[in-house]
Length: 228
Image 1 (tube, rainbow, N blue to C red):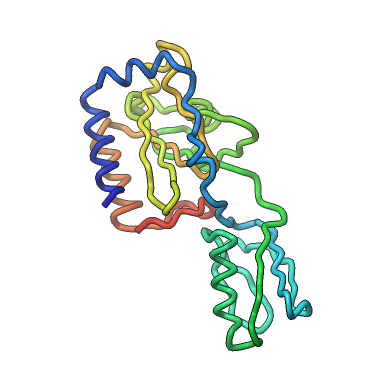
Image 2: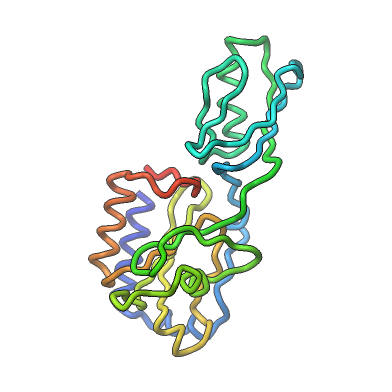
């Protein structure tokens, strides 16, 4: 699996202290690549959606995604919307309405998305969502989460990012080196990134990965991740 190879590569890099990491520390915070910024938007709880039927306007609705991630529409059972792209939800609704109306032509528009956010977890004083407006780095998100606990390992912070194809990328961040050398090596975050601060460089990260990824325990609601 690509995910397994990515995680293995991260663990090797985190434990060997490669010289390439020191070179990056002299740079500005790493900006997301154009491919990363083009990942399709994932619907979240609290989003306001317009569901429009081209040939059946009487079924048009404006609905808010509930806290459980579902929406309720006419004629069909409730539908799980959170975590899907608008296109994916359109396809799901089209299939659901085939038995109810003739030739359903549907489109879903995210009218009012909830505020962008990242999730900060691990050895921080206030684990949870951090709302973002404009640009924010991994270091800044940790500060907004109350900073790191004394038990944190600042050398082995990890950013988890969902990329196109729903693959999960891991990005190592050495906070200790960033403090010594300035902002170089910090990572510019994207909405729905997860910033994880471990207790130890490898063992605690492996426990977190095993819990949330290998054992498929749901990630915090609203992040739009679907890990398999």
